[in-house]
Length: 114
Length: 116
Image 1 (spheres, rainbow over the protein chains, first blue to last red):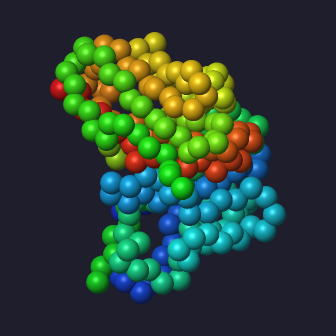
Image 2: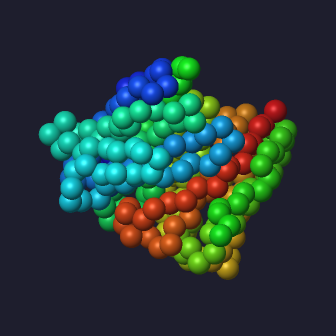
């Protein structure tokens, strides 16, 4: 079975600074990888996804993520954060051909300092 | 267009009671998923429907949990004899079709269930 680890429970970044949120996965083959964002009172919103091909994927709101097979990682990055980026971020993995939904990490809470 | 809607947004019940949580997916989406998100955790998969049938209910924690989708659209998650440990946010998601894990799932705002 697949699993996801988000090692950082909380991250604090100054507005305008760069951001990297870490995600490591465990899966026997090439997984399908997703990053979702959850703002208070809001549903989960998909930021970006990786299925195959170019290992650097671009998403919405200026986010990007890089798939590194050798490190089993799919880290999320943004060059310059805005106060509105404060939220909970979840990395998730889907198993190709699987019928068991997505497996999510525990999330990283992003705090933006003015 | 309208997104995934869930009702009620909040539900408070007493231990031992029966509750129903409703999910209205995006129109035309054939796949529907239920997840449970406990405090401080990521969503945990419960059950998935393709059309009217439950294609995979392996995530349901026990037989107190049951879900239906009789007409292939709206789904209801039913919890019998609720326990305090059932307190969580129950999320519903839908996707256009199930493509073996590749489909983009669109999530609703969730129902916060509190069992006293």
